[in-house]
Length: 149
Image (cartoon, rainbow, N blue to C red; front, side, top):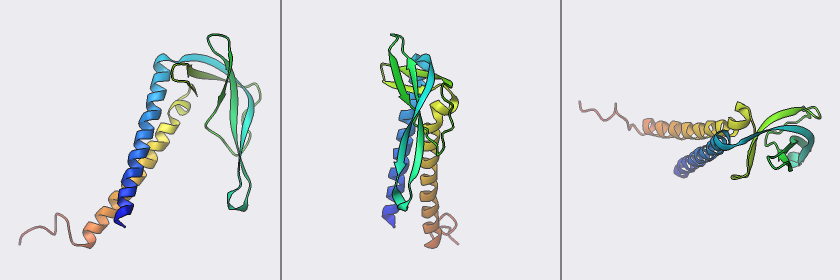
């Protein structure tokens, strides 16, 4: 069970590093990105056939013009189980050719992945700390047990 604690620490660090990376991308897009109006054109459909069921996820695909008037495509990384975006609906998009990234210009679009990764990292750390504190009280180790009488 000791290895589980190490595993939880490694998972937490990985999620915190991922959150830092995603935050860096969003910060770069805010600082140096170009804003464009993107139009919804289609869905990318992802099918999961695990557990004997077929489950579909729909990821919106947007098209936008870059500063050179080239038509580019952005596939959102936020999918859903239903088709909830209307055809020709428009969103504001931030893109950068230097880092080859684009994101929808909303708080959720820019920081959702960062928030989710921080949340999962905090859960992993919390579970590990709970397990360690439980072990310490189980073996009568801790500040109250170390006092001289």
